[in-house]
Length: 319
Ligand code: XMP
Image 1: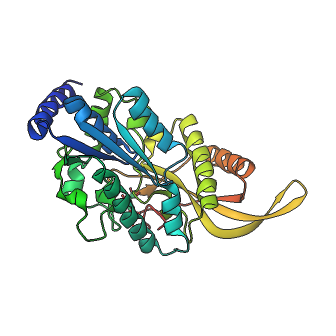
Image 2: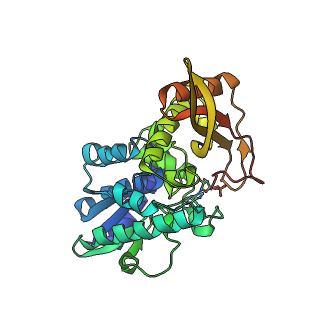
């Protein structure tokens, strides 16, 4: 891509000019934007960059490991992998209100990030994968999908990392341009075309209290759902697809036995910006295969339903 190759060179020069010999910290979320920002900055300043990935345990199945391996093994970018899964799940215990979940996660995220950033001696800059739409407006009533820090930063106070100067190389780009830049930087298509994912992660896809067992169940079911969507060649027709683990038990039969287990809702929408969205019209056989596999392969789920609400009046997420 001619224009992206030019943009890449221009940004590398700009980053070098801004940063000089200073040290930069980049918060990785596991998503496309912060990854592309980090790879671009690394190209510009190499070892002056340290990435910090706070693993909340609330990402999709295996996505944390994928990000760590991409950065360490493929790009050889210095990465601090903070294993904070237990902290986050501990902090969420007993909480079921959606906004309280968001605030709890956001506050803890900042504390953990701040502590790690403080260990990186002499850092002057904080890099973020802020995009143009994030600069202009927040697209969600809950905070909007965006960079690792912005999406969590709804809690007030002024943490230490805020004293750092910002490096935001993607500020002029839209999502599809970031994807093109990612490809230009050697990221594979499957990675750059990932669906948007909310900062609070799976916690807002488990209505009611979040427990480690529920997170595991949801991760397993969600992975099967996305696997079937990919196999059917539908992934790129969809803006976001995900599963929601409901706090409702219903009756089923398995062999000769009666079961009494959780309901899983599947959601998929088309959209151009997340502001409005239509439910996705799946071919029925694909949904049927998802339901069969999920009930057979995921312990604790015996019924699968599909959400046919568009936005408005529904929201994309359930919380
Ligand atoms: P809703 O549910 O408001 O979602 O229709 C619109 C878009 O925003 C994402 N979303 C969030 N992103 N933090 C985020 O970073 C959040 O708390 C949050 N809540 C919703 C949602 O995934 C969709 O892309």
